[in-house]
Length: 287
Ligand code: PLP
Image (tube, rainbow, N blue to C red; front, top):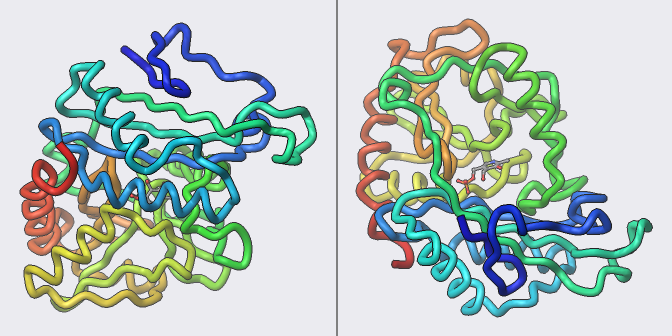
């Protein structure tokens, strides 16, 4: 396994980061999770756009141009001989001193890791996941903007801990106003009477690349879609519920907080969207 570390390829054992790195000390940095399907970097441009937008928002200078970054991704995949897998792209503020001032960090560090991915079983896609809502609240844009995919994932980790305690794979986060935001690392959709709903990002959701791909697919398939806030009640009484994410793709939810959703398995719209999604993953992107 070859890891890209600031322009060089090093082995896993030699891929080391300083204890003074502000990504480590403060979670000061950003990242992307990207999929490769049959050699295609799915939605590469969209992921790099989000990365550079996150960087700009937190005033982090990425020491590579957009083209160089894309080239670095392609080269890392080539070196590892991977055709299907997951790419983790990390840009941290870099090594500084113990103070939190980013001025002390000379330059950002860029790390690219590619790996195989263990995803849900086909059975899980057909039958759906069991999920719960958690007490951990999602921040809304009055604090750190949820559109920034920062290295500061403690909020999401606390959600994951609650999901683990409940024995479920993914949980649902609500914001401080009671609106459903997203999962620990997935966006959420519901379907009611043929209409697909997903929360607008301002309620506290990352602008997921998979989310946007599904919104686009709904348009192509003529499925009515509304980006509007909804509550847990709407989730409980939905005909279908599903999560979207780079790792999860489009995964149905069959039960939330003990309420059975629809027929208790992946519904027809979720199934159709997953099928259509799988058609674009090998073509929409960079080879
Ligand atoms: N929400 C959060 C908090 C995430 O970390 C992720 C994963 O990247 C998502 C949603 C899904 O986004 P994407 O489809 O871009 O992977």
